[in-house]
Image 1 (cartoon, rainbow, N blue to C red):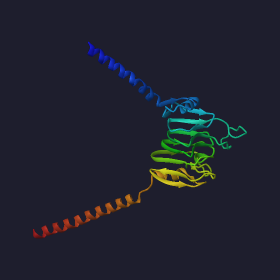
Image 2 (cartoon, rainbow, N blue to C red):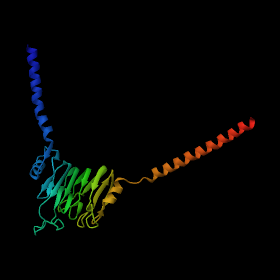
Image 3 (spheres, one colour):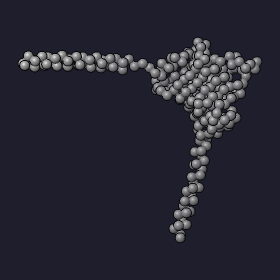
Image 4 (tube, rainbow, N blue to C red):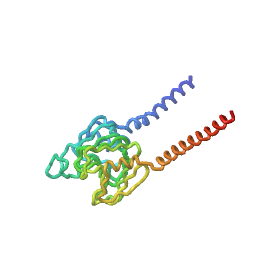
Length: 253
């Protein structure tokens, strides 16, 4: 009887010890459905991943100032506020408004559309990895700005990899997909582990980004041609030798 009671008590203690762990795990990924819920999740350091439960409209720039994963879950964040001192609704009126700003921290952003702002995303002295489909169409000055604000010493660093699919259907020569402002120092564009430095006022088009993500490999192509040529040559030599042997047999007969 004593052994049975001890076993039950031990199981009870185990359950109690697991409760806080389960709560932490449940809170580490927060699904949000509004601007206010998104901001509240950002203010809670125990939440490591914020997932959009539906499309969200914002009336202000959302600042990300701590390490976090933003999972758009294939939804849209759209800025619907005003621009500049005139209170214009036209996002080609400069107001320094970005849908998301990542400031002096690290973050991962995946599968989201950021639209309606002067820019979709500002990477301000931060290190940001983009995963899945990132759509920055519909912003007044371009898609993604890599910059350094006042009092920021670290370079903006954007990381793209083989599963990154950048989309910008509204890109024009004066609305680039990625750009570095003229008042900023060098920024870093990293594609598939290879880094390149972007200087002030440099702009990168969507086509250039896609070429970096899927580079041609001349060595592989050349090797394929060589292998085919060697294969054809081998077949030819085999046929010549076979014909000679056949003629010898016929002459003997």
